[in-house]
Length: 114
Image (spheres, rainbow, N blue to C red):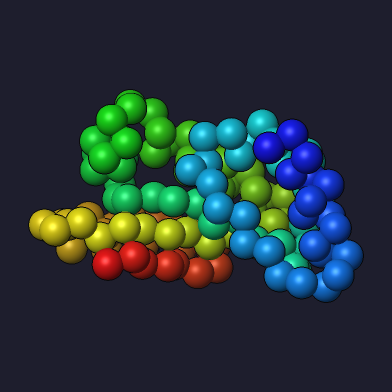
């Protein structure tokens, strides 16, 4: 949305929490629209490690781009959480590997949608 930066700033000015959901593909490109705030958290959707996430999204490179966006957001001082959908047959070991990686990176919270 072309006014997302303005919308987020207005919500933060009211001291309200905003969780900005994204697939992470444009996160690095759009970070300059925002300032780190305790009221702002990016929520990046990831469905597994590289092999699983790229398969689910049907697009190679989506995992790496989302991870790069998360790293850049964290580097700049933003709060970052993730959201992962558990599909029937989701690989528990893959999810554990994903959650371990995200925790090591400094991601604040891990949301799971069963």
